[in-house]
Image 1 (cartoon, rainbow, N blue to C red):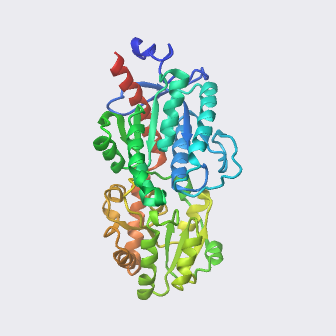
Image 2: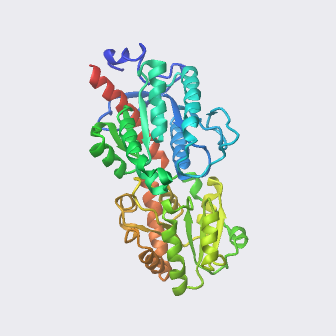
Length: 438
């Protein structure tokens, strides 16, 4: 049972109890800190200030977390922007439609200020109707909106969890989003630190995020939980893809190198494009598969280098078909640097597909890949090419690394275990509150 003093410190009922469902089952957490806490089935409101679902890494993480919580029996409602596509099985409430805003790719937009105001109104209505036990805000705007909703609806009795996927100022700098207004960057850095003082708990996609919150924002360690990007095991198994290989024009015996994600400089695509001709010079039969969007600048760059005949630009691909494309490849690449503090969901998917991964040598990449990563010098496209060639010239070793990668990710970084980590985070929120008020 809940301690009596705890049982009555939140609207007169046990924290976390789903008041709409009297059939709630009990889930027992397994963390040392919360091992004796009985965590009831919860009603959780997720706030995502993004055009969910648009087959992007941020959205894939949100999808994975919600599905994992649903499998554990929790009730989840998602509040998001007006655009994007609905995903079957995820209850979704969208903000008021703004017909002139159609941007779905990554990056900052000044339109987000009024889009977030509309999202706040939708989140308020959802909170009043759903009566959630926890508000889970994604990205900095989601955390700020969640805090306001909790304040206005419950005088902050509903705890707010901030899902941190990167540094706000770091991302703006990496994307070059402010353009001539880059002098405003210190203002955004201040806003980031301010927002990071509002939530009750933080779920971080990488150790870099957790370190930033601890060192730069003064967040106590007991309020931080790292939850790395994970993989959905049921999507990994893919049968023959001969038709897709033919459709992309890849010869049957040609080795293939794949990249999936946003085709933007902030994701390191310029380093990959630097490596492509260097790889081809040593191994002319190799083919490259680039899955993602926007494709316009990338296509122009390939045409300038006369590389479009050896690179398949697939554009935006449905996430639920992604592993069919990964099954075509022999080597996977993630050329992203770590400046924004973002985790890398694509690496988890590469590992789930049983592929060896070439990436830059960063703490986040080493944390997820361990000894099985093939690491190039950070920011060095030439060394990236060398490491790709190393695997292409030793296919037996590449397959063995891929096999171990798959074992590692399914054991340590599946959303099945990620859902339990989120449960422990929610339990820790209540434990922190109880410790504070007892």
